[in-house]
Amino acid sequence: SPLHDFLKRLPKCEHHIHLEGALSPALLFKLAKQNSITLPQGDPAFASPDALLSRYKDFTSLDDFLQYYYIGMSALIHSADFEALAWDYFQHASADGVHHAEVFFDPQAHVSRDVSYATVVTGFQAACERAEKELGITTILTACYLRHLPVADSLAMFHHPDVQESYQNGTVKGIGLDSSELNFPPNLFKELYGKASERGLRLTSHAGEEGPVEYIRDALDNLGIERIDHGIRLADDPELMKEVAERQIMLSVCPISNVVLRCVKSVKEVPIRKFLAAGVRFSINSDDPAYFGGYILDNYCAVHEAHDLSIKEWETVCRAGIEGSWCSDKRKGEML
Ligand code: ES4
Ligand code: ZN
Image 1 (tube, rainbow, N blue to C red):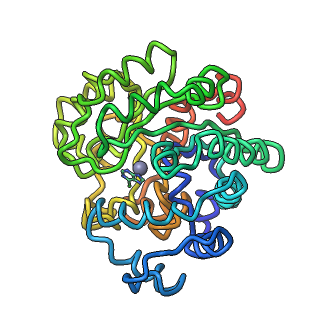
Image 2 (image 1 turned 135 degrees about the vertical axis):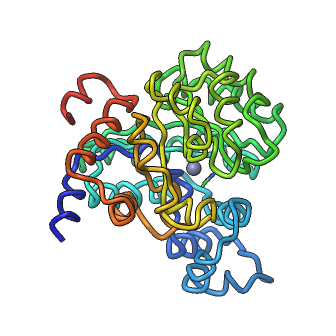
């Protein structure tokens, strides 16, 4: 349709994609075989890539998904595996019309199973450089910390010399907070964010996905974040929504993710119109595209189908995404 072409051609920025969430069942099975990794024998979902893909249609919650997400990454061992994974994502992103991608990864999920931070970052960085060269996509790596693990683990990871070096040399420019949200409020990670802020890192956090709007207030007040990942519960507090709009804090909204993980019943329930009316800036993102059955353009199309944005509104959304990016002003100028 003409609108599909229009949405594809819009200069899109993606701000919320977990590279480990771009692991397709096909690549998962291929790497597991190459690396002699045994997938869970007792779970019929791991009988074949097709069976796994079918299981992905039945997620009941964030934690139900995360269980598969953490098993999936057990197939990732070598730098070349991480490079192949990220390259797979960048090719999809390029086909969908992404000009700039700020991508998450979960260091603790790899180091905890004895895959070194350097292995992970070397592979991802190689794919980022290739994406810039061959696809013209600019990239930023953000390291997410896992909120379901003890706070001490996140601090130990942050202070690891290889992690510090990646922050120092600019390979990794930001930190995020992800994994199970309920019962893990942002303020637990206040010390981590204070230290990251001192180092001049960019700061974002998942908040208000499964958790309540109070977690958004908590993240803004206690972590000093400049962006909110998901943030769909913000619409529950009109006062806070006004403040977020005034402070030009961008939300990285992931509509298909929200439906698949049952945070909302349908994309119509994602408060897109409330955000537009309140002047809240947001971008539209894929989150874990290989698990949720859609890359960024699928998410744009789903929002259009559910909320019927005008061309002017789409341009507003895209401009907010460019302005809210963490790239240079020069790069923003090229995209605007
Ligand atoms: C995630 Cl959808 C989502 N929420 C929180 N943490 C995550 N890690 C990967 N995907
Ligand atoms: Zn996410």
